[in-house]
Image: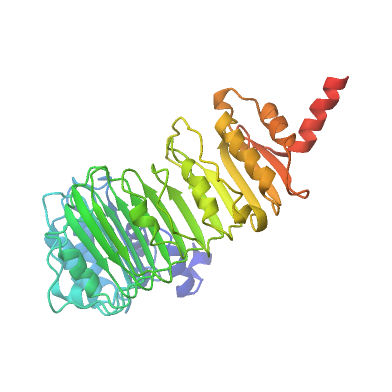
Amino acid sequence: MDRISGLPDELLEKILSFVPTQVAVSTSILSKRWKFLWMSLPKLEYDDTCNRYPESALEEFIDKNLPLHRAPVIESLSLHFGGDSNVEPEDIKRWVEIAVSRNVRELDISYSHSEKEIIFPSSFYTCKSLVVLKLRYVTLMDVPSTACLPSLKTLKLESVTHPNQESLQQLLSVCPVLEELSMHFDGDHDGVFTVIVPSLQRLSLYIAHDLFLEGYEIETPSLKYLKLDDQNIMEHESDITNMPKLNEAYVDLVSHDLKSVIGTVTSVKRLTICSPDNAYGDDLVFNQLQHLTLCVCKNDSLNVLGQLLKDSPNLQVLDICVIEGHWTDEMVCWNQPSSVPQCLLSSLQILSWSRYFGRPQEREIAIYILKNACCLKKATFLADTEYHVSNLEMIKELTLSSRASSTCELVFVEDDDDREFEAESEAESEAESESE
């Protein structure tokens, strides 16, 4: 302990920052040197989501120690409380007020009491130092007209209840430099929501399947990244406009019309799509698209592949996969393009196919791409033998198919141990054994 105590305060504080705040405070009994070190910690975390503390013990601990904190700036304050916690909304309000007075930069609050509403102190809505705000399972009451969060750049809202349809946009409107917004909507938010943020650069939306949703409006002229995970099964409208700077998009839809979304992401260089629709309309061109990831978990998923290839003349990387957490349906035949898409003739270099079952429909697509992709450098298949098609049989079928690119490397990865090998060498070994 003496050797540790001889370290500079800055290093000791760094060490203490890696342990829970309650543990850091307990080191104050070690010696006079340690007595006040915890009071300068830049990050404070209080977590009782698992009800690990005796009744009222944690709130009494925070009430006693948080006001003693000496750091001129609290870099981060996390308050996480489960549904059985004895913490009251008034407690959180008081602690937030203290954090604001200490120029808090990041505030992370999770409060699972469904019947108790947190009312933030007025000072919270005018906090000039706050850069990151994360709220989970709280009810966000009306934003005062005097509110302004001039430094807030990151806002994450998960299962946050809004008193009315306008309250979300009221909050967003008082964040003039907001750059990143993440929202998780579930059954506690109904009706219509609006996201109009001129400064926003990254937007992630998750919409639960059982949400009573009428629609949403998004207008974000500075947006560079969009993730739209719309699992809602109800019929609803979407109005997504004005995203000329969009560079990457992730679109995962369960029942929502792909046509109403796809037209807003034609400027992207990277695109991930999962949709039940087998088409999205005509007159769309993805001139900038270089990397396409297509999830084929739904039975019509591959039908849209032909259209995407046709409409993406500069595509360089094609990744066919099943997104983690998605189930695979029985596949139907794909709509083969009437003429060879331009990207196959001049730009496609990489093909990656994970969960390749070797079913007739998949073989047809794989052989078509190999036959027509003139610039293909590498084609990788993650073999899945669920449908009782052996890896070797898959390899032989594709190895013996014609390839437009003489330099294309054909690689298989076994599903069981992720062992990678070149298809040609495996097929040749089998051929030699048969000749013997």
